[in-house]
Image (tube, helix red, strand yellow):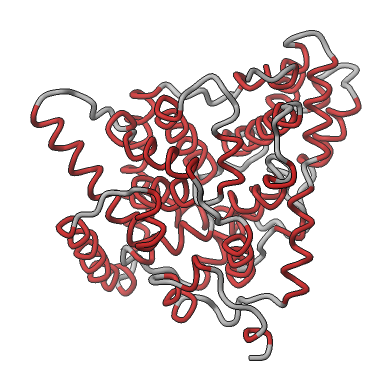
Length: 417
């Protein structure tokens, strides 16, 4: 096609295994024109005006009062806030209005699909493709290493636990209802992003020329893809299969999450092809790993034991921690490719690479009866949800994550270097 000949694939999609992904998994042509690629760059300079205004309100009001008003509106509705500040009313007018395209049946179906794939998505895809793959975007890493207060090593387990908990809330049955955990915690994440953005904008050393606006729309869209696109692709590589309707439902759920998290409507994939095109643009512009990428990746890999509470010193626990780490990083090497994996310093084990491939073969065989036996998909969905819940409970007990993200409130007032 004419358009595909205009641009060469970025390194991420030009190398194995992603070059095969474009050929066999992508739904048609996903490459943009040069004009489309150039137009995309404007999103690197845009933030989230509605959330930014709320954070400025936090800064204007006495310490703690802005957060208190936000939490009342979040938990009980904006009408429960007497004389609510205009910034708060405008913000909640946006998030409380349902987009015309929102389909509750698709949200419910996406929850069931997420339950089915949850054990794999949560234990492998989320950590080694979403988080670790996200570290390839070095501009985003500047925020992660710049917020202060924690070293990369101590930050990693909590970040995994908080991200896992948020994914679980969003994908739970009914989780995106107005007063449910998925909806509320998505808005807390949105405000957290705005707080971090405000803090980074007050840093005298923030390099706008090289790093763009902090927590900008391009980076937010990449984050969304690491939960939607990556969940599907990452599970497909593990042998799981999706119908067209299942894919549509999953992308619809994350489209709504993107709406709530403050993404520009142009950056909300409405279907699988949109997500692939947006991922191409992300790989083209954002995937430029550097030393911060290595630092964060190594910290993440070292966190696998603590995240799951496997941090004892006895021989059995150390062996289990080694196996979990090697298996996870072997999957990560398959998903990120040799060049990226070597750059990040990820360990390489032929034995565990073979075990991951064997897992994919077994899952592929299991998927055959699951798709043809009546009721088998429902059984898989319910069983997967139970296992996912058990994993989340274990991670939460081991790490005590801060699901309110209130620790970032200090960034609304000042930046702690």
